[in-house]
Image 1 (cartoon, rainbow, N blue to C red):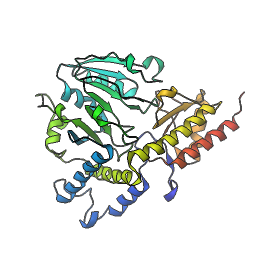
Image 2 (cartoon, one colour):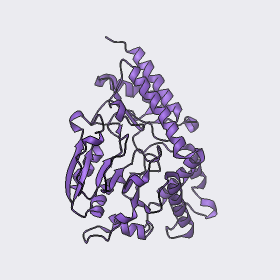
Image 3 (tube, one colour):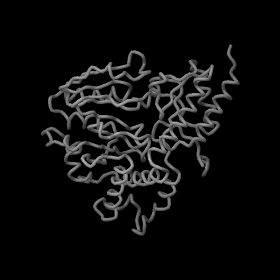
Image 4 (spheres, rainbow, N blue to C red):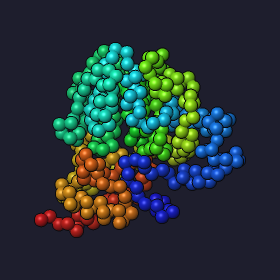
Length: 365
């Protein structure tokens, strides 16, 4: 299926692959959405036809993720990075928050939050180049913090939380940008979940925010309108013109996930892909995975040879074989295979075959 329409295997960390059936629906409805005579990109967000699209997308997200009724779902512009400021501005009460630094984006989020409140770094693995996730007992949490922030899956370094931190009465705020909808998750364990949609949900340009209703407060005078969670919740994310196309594609992707068996089936597929790739790396004498086994991401697999010249040769050869965007992030080098929801198992099989081919062609010196 992956090579249909002469498609390649896109291992990009984002924007990433979308399901072919969803792309086909977008194509078929591009000029005339269900008899409306126009594209979704042309219609008013206040129209009845788009209102049905938005309501359906939110309903499907609630269904597929099992979101409790006392949580609000918001479709916000700006991607996940804008939420780095929105979260402290909306949740501050005592004026301090705990951040667990496990990679690039949790570090950026903590620095952004420090502009608006006092940030305590409750734990960090920076001294080992973020190659693992700290255990619960390593977290130095403040019981008076306004919230605890984590990034569940680290796109650049290839690690993930295999557990949900216990934070007591303090709300847990989590960035799920690169792992949302990849496996079942208990939403009730979080005060707030947010995710940029460009990895597992839709094209870039929007963030999903899932927030417990008791955390929706009257805004502080200095809170920008477009970052006001309560306003967005009261207006059903329609205070201004939202990213209509992203909301539309979100609904189509959620329909697709439901049709294949939900996040449970998606988790089975993702685990199969990740297990196969990590097994290959662990058996290799040339390649090695960058992250401790207990902290490895199912979505972003980072690995390297230890030789920059060999790494570059591998990436070039992969592209020639229809596997693109395998170069690691500039912060860490090496390679990174982002195997999000919509990367077919065939893509991982092709990568594993090339890993073995490359290793055979480069015997130990």
